Image 1: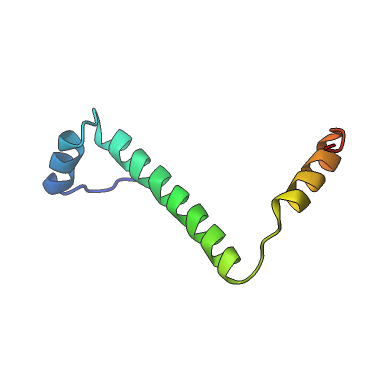
Image 2: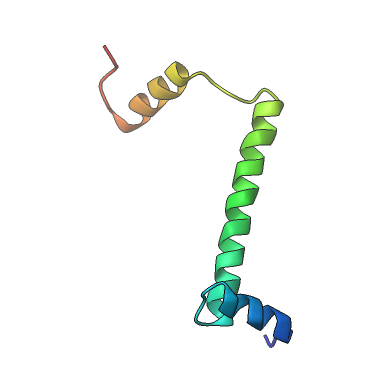
Length: 70
């Protein structure tokens, strides 16, 4: 796929310290994925889809075969 990149974006990439526009775009995509994951967590929290640390710890220990916390 061929994508035309405006000169302004190339300037931003260089100013941000990236060696190539590909590196710059890869970084932007990665940061957006992180933002989406954080937003999903916030949305889950607001909707009440949360569990206490003790519940999480118990489930994790059970799933991976760790002994229960004493």
